[in-house]
Length: 199
Ligand SMILES: C[S@@+](CC[C@H](N)C(=O)[O-])C[C@H]1O[C@@H](n2cnc3c(N)ncnc32)[C@H](O)[C@@H]1O
Image (cartoon, rainbow, N blue to C red; front, side, top):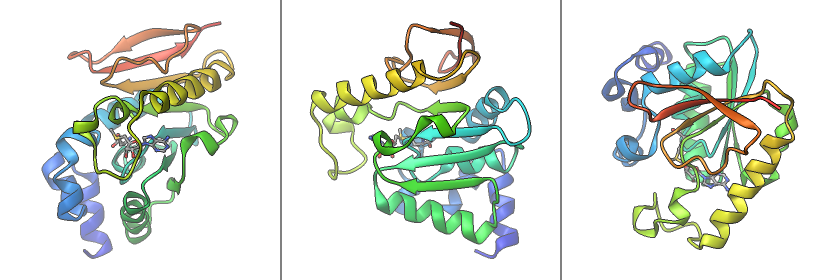
């Protein structure tokens, strides 16, 4: 897709149009695994408090949240994703569309310093470890041990961030959110929740 056409798709508010930037195999997973465009933009509105706010998407898939948020917001969106094939999709879109405020890294989120970020987004990244039949593919482990370890890592790191740090969660039971964060709002359907570190 030419860069101008690509950007038109990425600016769309409609998921069906936005998702056409993805290869079919990735597009088919969108309804279940990737953030809807309207949710990404609503979350960005809460997370970005000034131009350049550095937002981390923990488990970013093919970058749908980061890209949808970046084209409509002055924040800077970084994703970390363990599946290389998903990162490659994100890299290609970001490069071809020339999006300066989105980037994606390949790796385990446990290896990334949270200190470099001011706000955080999670779309139920670790649910797959609990529900093996609902996995994106068979390339990761599935034990509850992993789930507990990842949840604890995120909770500890969020807890170490300064008072006022903002987090948005989409779906899930939010076990990654430590008790020093308060829920300060949510979307009408209750799936998107806004959190702020209060103490
Ligand atoms: C439900 S998808 C959400 C994707 C994206 N955040 C979005 O909203 O469109 C969760 C993603 O988290 C990734 N993930 C799970 N555990 C991870 C880990 N420990 N490190 C990096 N990525 C992880 C999965 O591979 C999957 O792509």
